[in-house]
Image (cartoon, rainbow, N blue to C red; front, top):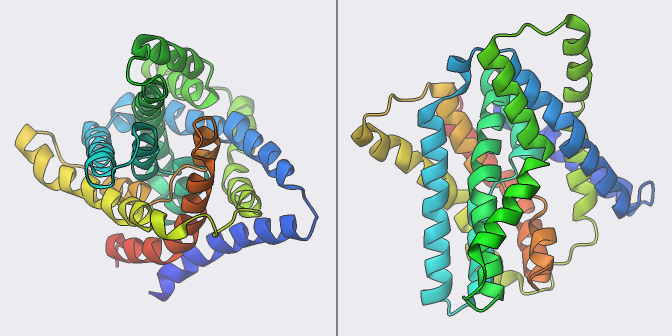
Length: 318
């Protein structure tokens, strides 16, 4: 257990450093958005491109990982939406963001730094695969659902999906995945100066992303109905990884899909066990769900220190 705390401790200390630095006035909360833009637009794309471009295509595309994470996430999306509508009596919009909260992980800012410490050889590949699932399937689907709900159920699904596709085409993470896969397929060997330049950006992703998360947490309040978001937090931190594990263990063998390596299975489970994506309140703001979403994110971040430590103990090689 001390080995696990030795891994999680520094991660949350960096998050705490970002929070304290913002609270002390060394940085404004808006500065964290700048750090976040650097990570999302440069550092993480560089890392993903580097991880994919320097591997053969057979080492990158793992059907078992993709299907386990995709089906597990879709299962949580469906369960959360159904629970919100039928059991909780929530509106279609609120149920949609409940589903987003339990099915979309913070793979980039928190997931990757933890994987880098736990399963370093597959961390970059796992992040790239998660980007494919979350950016090409989960977020476009959920945003289309939100648009449809805002329009009273008669909204233009095709238009919402088209707008999502246009945004994805300009997304640096998606561009990095595409470019990395093209380089891998073509078996192009990149010049060393290019590789080293990309590495310099990639190496900054872990610490800067965690620091930015801490700064973004400053100013969030627990007073906005924290009791109501406890089921959401529990479903994200416990239900989502269990759903991915269930698909990997029971469904994929029935489909005849070759199993994952132990490291990739650990990566898939840990990625699903992360808190919800950091832009969750930002996405929810346009639909009137910002306060509840921000409260859920804050509680999820605090609680994840304990749940992630438990999940890391479960998958730890020792």
